[in-house]
Length: 136
Image (cartoon, rainbow, N blue to C red; front, top):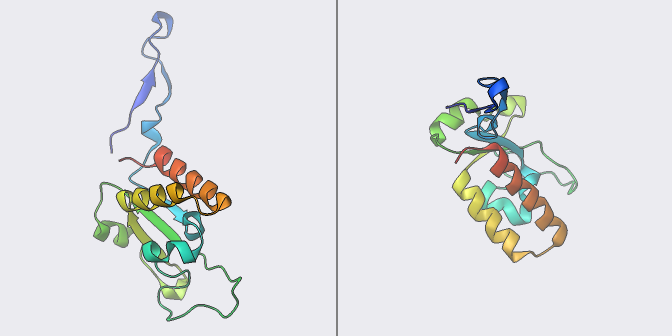
C-alpha cells in the first residue's frame, strides 16, 4: 500500500511533515458489524442470515444479537480476505465477506429506497465510513 503524506509548502517549514493525508489513513478493508447494514430482513441476501453461519437456524430469542463481523474489501481477493479473517466456530468468530462494489451497490439502492428514515440514516453512516476508510 502506498502511503501519502502532506508536507508544508511554506518556505520556513519546507519539507516538514505536517500530518498523514486522508489517503494514507485508508486501507484495503474495513471490518464492520452485521447491524451496520440494517436489519437481517433487509441485509440477509447480501450477508446471509443474522445468526452463526455454521448453524442451520438462529435463537428462538428474537432479541439475540450475534457478534458477526462483515469484512468489506477492495483490491484483494476473497481468498486472501478469508485467510486473514477465517470463520472459527469454536471461538464464535464469524465473518461475512463483501467487496466494496457489492457494499456500495447495496447501500446506494437501500438509501435511495428510504423505507425507514432511521435505517436510512444508519446506512448513510455506513457508506460514509466506507468512503473515508477504504481505498477504491
